[in-house]
Image 1 (cartoon, rainbow, N blue to C red):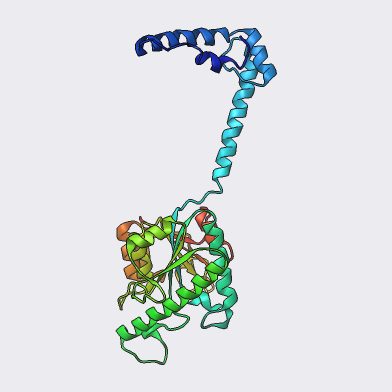
Image 2 (cartoon, rainbow, N blue to C red):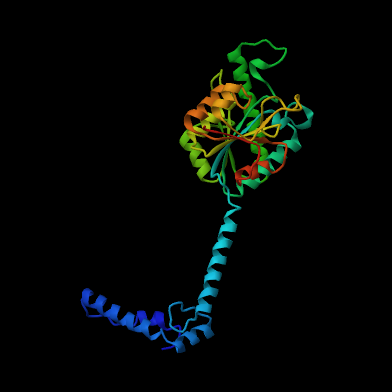
Length: 322
């Protein structure tokens, strides 16, 4: 019997007209006989000449076994190396402040800046990561915190929500110009410009490979977009919240004003609250702490940081349970 005919030998036993039990017993004996015929030096040599490995044949030397073992180990190593480039997070919620859109001009929406953000998001999206984005509106209006403008807190917060819708539409336009399908979901219903936020609809958009942009915060005054990002992360069952800032991570003081501010590569929720660190507001931190949602704070001004975080590189600061 020549090398390469073993598979044919397995199927050569005639079962027609036999009971299933008799057929199974006969086929087992027939297969054992066929395999035994291959355990000879002559067949092993034929296998080797044909480039077919017959690991269990008697003519297969220990040297050949070692070569085969090394080849298998090499293939496994290549497989592990390929996995290093895979994202560690499958679904993320990215918190972008309104200031991240204003660029060097210091207000409004800077065209080149928002295009750069869209390109970076496209690279992350190409990895197969499901991306949801919560946008702020501080580049247009800061609600009740607007300097030189006395206004009722609730009214100011609603005006700030409308500013986030403007930013969301601008980011959507930049992403779709780069060929990325995007949906804007607003917590305040405005049918002409955005879909209303419905949790199942938002989840379905993510599953279909679309980037989802959340606008208008939670739709309620007295809640920041940080808290809205934490809330949406829980609702979307995200793996992590990525908080984009102007600095490299979490410090015990503002590093733009204090030169020797201490940097925290990793810190717990409780330490953030006890030390009063301005990572996110206390409501957002408490919500993440109660639900075990990790937060990664990083510098948005360094190109490629979002991708590095998603790939598991040590970038910025991480807020985790104790």
